[in-house]
Length: 405
Image 1 (tube, rainbow, N blue to C red):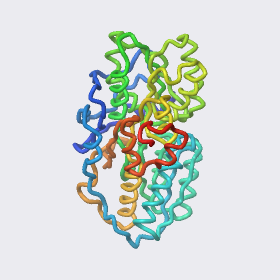
Image 2: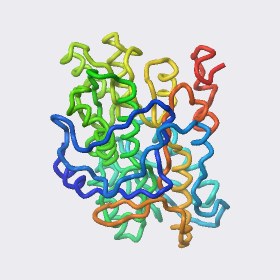
Image 3: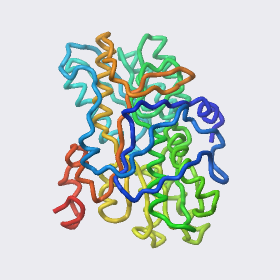
């Protein structure tokens, strides 16, 4: 991994407000304490948490999660804001960016500010290309940049370029290590990581070997997520009640590369693994493809996050076990609301932000979206929220499986 990413990571901080929690939907989940890295970790940097997040609610029913009140936001009514806004996405590798986040942001901007033009660009996992796209958007007259950083450290150049042009930058989902980021909209990767670690502990037994497939080393989310699951799993690894193999980073969250990494782990262990902790649905997809070639698909638990349609189908097919979901539509809505505030020069409501995050040494206001664990027992939650279509989800799935009838 690159040393500049390590140095930036050592400066990360995350302070969470009382409204943020990952809701765990299995009463049997077992949580362990602890912190730090496992043996031969990909990063030796310390945990980024500045303060401890509220404890995970381990056994709330789905109805409790669904009925949680939404935080107040900017005015939901249409405004007469004008101009251009750029939404800079990192890649096509992770399905959510172009299939969920992009369309949702454009939808909400059209609803809240119909006279504002949205410029959407995808950087193909190239930080220099993303910088060029930001420069081009500013040259085209963009008044706000919303950035999902390819590389949270290198994206500071985007912020400084925008700052010089008096264009505010909103960091979306991924941290950008610049004190000049105006706001951040996203979630708590540490709590999501804890959810993955807690679920994995509850679904393995003493002596089991867990393969860990982390995300992209250039993504701050991946590091903080890993800190979260290691805070749960490290005591088990230290006591040898669970065994760690892999613990590898997946460049660009690429499922093809995750496939190769899992192949190597299975070969080195002679297929002796009992669970796969995959950092998101893309790395889960690649891991599952490898498990298929080794005759293990559907026989061992596999985690993920994002609850993409393809992952939801894998869950219903018994190939992936769970995914951690947060409403992308809510993230896009909150981002659109704050963009409207920036375009109109109005202050967001005092209760809009749920937390702060330390970026480049500065405390930045953040709006965090809660997350829940999704499996086949509560996938109806996604349908009810409009996150997925039941018709698309159930296409090819036997009747009686999950919400399919």
